[in-house]
Length: 194
Ligand code: IMP
Image 1 (cartoon, rainbow, N blue to C red):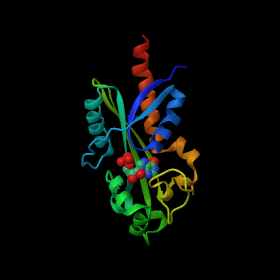
Image 2 (tube, rainbow, N blue to C red):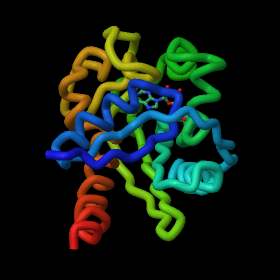
Image 3 (cartoon, rainbow, N blue to C red):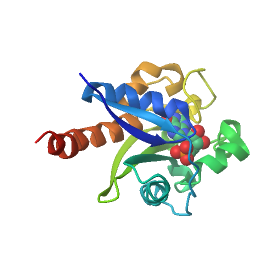
């Protein structure tokens, strides 16, 4: 099958790999492009992603997606949320663990939200995925990236960094990309074929 290629503006190759794991099943290949875009200040990653894709489209004038993710920790009132990249750079996983020190297991609930935003100049559309879980007591595992070593998905005891094959199937990003691919293969690819 001839794969449909679509540009994915991101500096993170892990995200491209995870996206292509899903895209493969739909005959869609995500091609990484390196275009920086301003991440506006907003609590919802969906708004950040939408503004980002509008900016990238205005630069390249071709169909493109961007994706933004946030980690929302309940005991910290949703912090770091849409500021997850900044917080990761500043305090990292050890800083988050310190903020939660003494917080018992049943109060360490958190979720990831991922939003994929698409634009082809006519349509701007977002697709979301959420992964519920909790923050571990210590960092574990060496796969994945970012907060993976401290995030345990609901129903499991291992961190995402210990179970990359499962992450590929169930993550916030996998869900958001599955939603995108479902829509894209129906709405866009079938319109091109008819
Ligand atoms: P962004 O979507 O690249 O802005 O990511 C925000 C922050 O969350 C960065 O520090 C990423 O490393 C981290 N992050 C994004 N996606 C994931 C993930 O799937 N697992 C763990 N951390 C992530």
